[in-house]
Image (tube, rainbow, N blue to C red; front, side):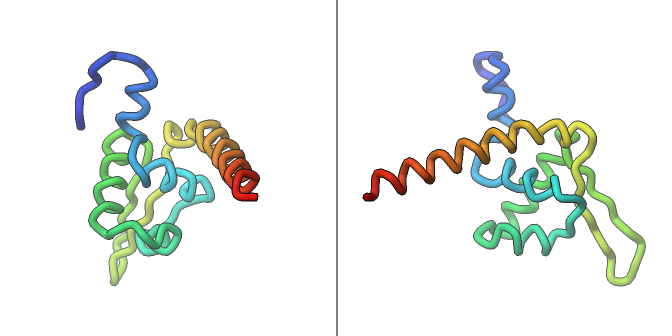
Length: 110
């Protein structure tokens, strides 16, 4: 992962959560553990490769835990860790801001 240029706390957060999918994946995992294909259904336009890379990055950061169950076929679940749960307020603010943006856009389309 890239190094912080400014040392700013916002840059640190954006370095980890920036991009199109990571915070969205976190938002879906707030509902509880999910399997890989369930996440693909939740985010249908994400490629399998990008989903894998983003889940690995979140796991490496300690925000997501990957659990492999010794079954046939193998069952793998992804869940937020305690540190990942700390993103709940961030997701809530982003959701509120997104709703405001959509409403503003709808009002400007009139």
